[in-house]
Length: 411
Image (cartoon, rainbow, N blue to C red; front, side, top):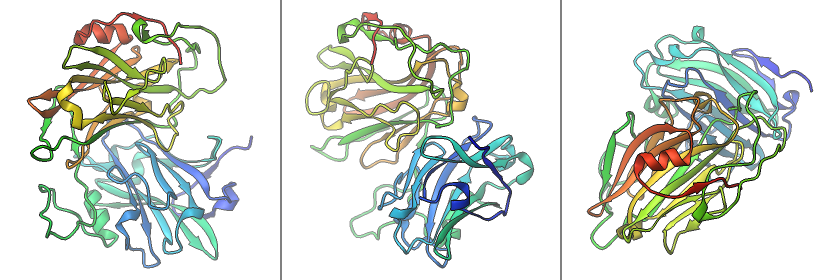
């Protein structure tokens, strides 16, 4: 396999010269340090370099363009299928923004990588501390049409403002972070509102949408960097961790040659009638949405590169039947670098900004992270950041008092 091309700042290249002539590829941003809180976005611009259609800003509040040509597939990765884009989209600009005091100069030894569909690297652009000063936002790399062909160029142009400054630079307006607008209010162009639970123990309570109305469909989405790998010394095992009451017997054995980690989303639940169990892909215990436990697991992303990621759907209109839910992620195969995985869970509740909980405070020798606790408190939905790491399901269970009987299981 040929070595990936190294792209330089300002260098302009045809995608066909990078082996990406079909326009189907992934941009993965491997950013360091992982503790630096960053928001990535992709702006679809017209021939005047303006965001004339706000639906073509792809970011945490809007993870896919209407045509499906751009999808945010991880915390800092985007999947592209350029043939799907309408003729009105003349360029795509991928950006980074941070609210950290030191801005982007904290970035060091990072890379932007263009990946083939098989995951191999076609080209990469080195991002080091020398590129930025105190800028809080940057146009990192762009893809644009010229003479009937798509091309790319690392731009690395910084801004003093953050994500809002980028939105305004591209000619769009930013929605004010306010309560739900009245029916007469004009629709906002781009809403940048989100709630980030930064520290362990941080919590927020969400009201129901109105009298006689529940919380609607609550979506918990796990995403992580597609570039995260298992430790080379880690054994590959098909055995996992699953409650005996959920079925499945463990079986060991080598499988496959891929080094990508398998990071799984799941939850423990307790209903108001005392029923306790788990919902997760391991053991095929996917739950049910319309009936107890009113939680459904969808998607099992084995590499972190899935456009859909992993989802738990919670029936918020049945919250009166639910006491508490502990959301967790665990490494099903191998031992991973949690910091490199850069995992994030987003809890989306209708009528409220998305709630973001990052898998930080890493303990690398433990393969399971309790991410957040969702609780029914007098009809309100309370979300608390946990960010605690454990050696497996049994240890997590004991910490939060579920009292299940655990034994080995498999997918």
